[in-house]
Amino acid sequence: MRSHVSPTSHRNETLVSSRGGDRRAQGQLPVVGRVFPAPVAAKVPEIIFLFWVVKVLTTAGGEATSDFLKTYGNFGGGGTEVALFVIGLLVQFAMRRYRAFAYWFFAYAIAIAGTGFSDFLHLDVHIAYAGTTSLWAVILAAVFWIWQRSEGTLSIHSITTQRREAFYWAVVFATFALGTALGDFTATSLGMGYLASGIFFFALILIPALAWWRFGLNSIAAFWMAYVVTRPLGASFADYISKPHNMGGIGFGDGPTALVFALAVFVVVSYLAIARPDIQQSPAASGRPASETPENSTTSPGLEVSIPVSVLDSESD
Image (cartoon, rainbow, N blue to C red):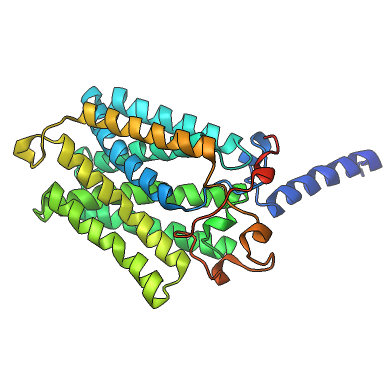
């Protein structure tokens, strides 16, 4: 017995299928795309000097905050970290373009949660720092590889779809977890101490900047190399400030250290939200041809200074 399918039903199925295909073609995620709006502009900031300042402050603050929350145990402290992460994710993906407070709140939440998860693997699962460092390095490399294979670019100037933004935040989480493990590995396993580790990573972060400036290192590679190193840099100095003297610190305390860095982040991000010097430019405004791919850009996504395009940011979310 043959079933009869009405033309109207067939058209509706085709329309639903077409809409799903359109969402995928536009870079929307299968489930997230049904809940959150598609981006209408870049979802991440232009990389000016203040970006690096806030990035280091969030890494330091995330380290101290996570260490402070550990005093409340895996349920209380870990639950708080997960809650902050979920809130940050929901707020960030609800935005249709970069907003300073939403972006940096989520980055701070990832700094806290990434630290907590990395420390959990060491303290509770009993994986050595060398092991957790290697694990997160492999995870980070895998995310980069999948992102590049899927999207054909790792440029921050391409974060204009949900799928690319998801890859971006996955990399951010992996870098925070890796940086936590790496900083602890150099400070404790290698016996360098927190201060020496901080100085070491400060010197290390200058290498990609110098390589890009003087020797023509690819700007995208230079940015991500520096980005990864900011995590152990900030975490090492945060531990040096917060930890007691018998652990090689100056004994300021995890709670007070976390509060100071949180206030510092709030002040700088407030300026960014008001003055908006870190809004990404359109290709025409930035001088890049519309047809120019991020990989062929002659400027660095990590070092140039940009002028905000207020007219683009004046659209409602």
